[in-house]
Image 1 (tube, rainbow, N blue to C red):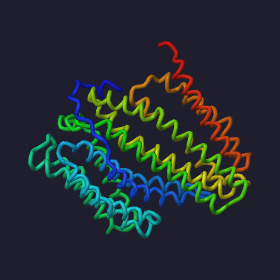
Image 2 (tube, helix red, strand yellow):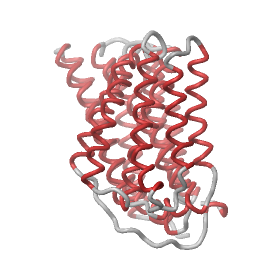
Image 3 (cartoon, rainbow, N blue to C red):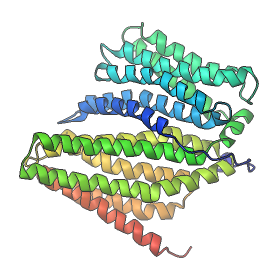
Image 4 (tube, rainbow, N blue to C red):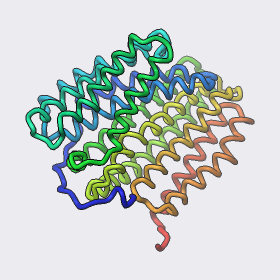
Amino acid sequence: MTAADSGPTAAVPEERRADWFELFFDLVFVVTVAILARGLHGDPGGVEFGTFLVLFFPAWWAWANLVATVNISGGDIDRALSQPMLVAAMPGLGLMAAAAPEGLGDQAWLYALGAAWVQVVCFLVWVRPALRRETALPLWRPVLYCLVPAALWAVSAAVPGAGRFVLWGAAVALEMVLLAVRSEYGAELYARVSVEHLVERITLFVVIVLGESVFTVVATFADHLTAASGAAALAAFLLVTELAAVFFAWGTTAAARGLTRARAGEATRVIRDTVMYLPYFLVAAITLLAAALGTAVAEPTHHLPSGADWALCAGILGFYTTNAAISLRYGDPARSVLAWYVPCLVLTAVLLVPAVLLLPAWAAVFCGAAEVFALTLLVKHRIRHPRPA
């Protein structure tokens, strides 16, 4: 936490829990992720990786905005209003999912309309308390943050060529700029963050994405019922399970502790970065990894294609890199974070990279599982036997 992030202690809001309806809502978003991930199977190249990352971010941004809206506006809208809001947003995310395969091509206009739809829903939620002056949020803020970007997305649907994507970038950039500006009403809104709700929402979403990884492995194995595919599927299952254990055993605890500390110190930038930005890279890494694992199960006795090599290594390294960035953003000591992150870099370089280049796919995935297992043991050891400060 930086000095610029700290401030006086704010009142602690009443904690809330995520409900089943929010989990149901997440299923629509996960469909978008699954459809976008199709282009990463086999031997993806730079175009496929770039397309996934470009199209995934607006979808992620829409989800994060909706989660933040439900969380922060908990005092202004009750369950009777939050559920209809999520229902209203689902068709927008559905449009983005349907258009995703050609989201940068012939269906870009449909993808843009889906993004505009979600922004209008968020605006309708925030404009009511702003008009009634039930919150410190001035009316111009939801107009600039929600309605203007919605207009840019909608107009882009009718703009041909590169101009369309310029408008996409302008819409997202405007929201990022507004999030970067400190203000008294912004501090008031962040003070109302429900940490328990945020941790549960992000955790439940990661559960679904990890479940999608398991589905990819099992579905691919069902189409390739051989001993080698079974070995690759087993290794992939162990790898995903170990990552899940790492995330749920330590990641969620660190998130609850870090967000609570950030809210108490009015570290608004910490909350913004660890809720809106960094989880995007975490989910993207898991999605890349899932695609590589599916390729390994489909062709277990061959070397992984170069695109799958990149996806496997980037998936594991991206998972730990993002968690390291989140830990540092929460204010964890750099020495503590580097104690497990440096071994991750070393194991990736000396074990995983040679494995994907030299070994058949099933063996390369086992090496990936071995790396994660070794890092898990290291973290457990450090927790049980911490070094004196």
